[in-house]
Image (cartoon, rainbow, N blue to C red):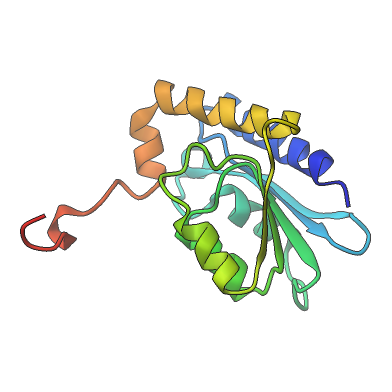
Length: 166
């Protein structure tokens, strides 16, 4: 399987979403045996007004019904959030390829997926042009639209849920 080609496809989808005024996150679900793309998509918060259609969710939706996803790889331009990481674990997707972890707040979701047995590959921007593109696009988006970045990640920490004294 050619992770770089699939990551470049996910990046193309992220760039399309960004060109439409949305969040630049793309995802591709790939069959591990054949390398065929089963589903693809990009974040659609703006386009559909739907806060749960992240790039990974759009790719899963595009793939549609499958008996299982036990021999697939989720290729995503940005480190999955907890919603997407949880979905990856729930559906038994055994492998994830990530283009950008530089723009994520922490490695919590990577640790979560690995703890659940998911093989997580983070593309190295020193050797992956697609990873460099993913990182640059999200960094640009975060500068251009910090409000939309925060909205896509759930609006930030709810102050009512903070422990007393913090």
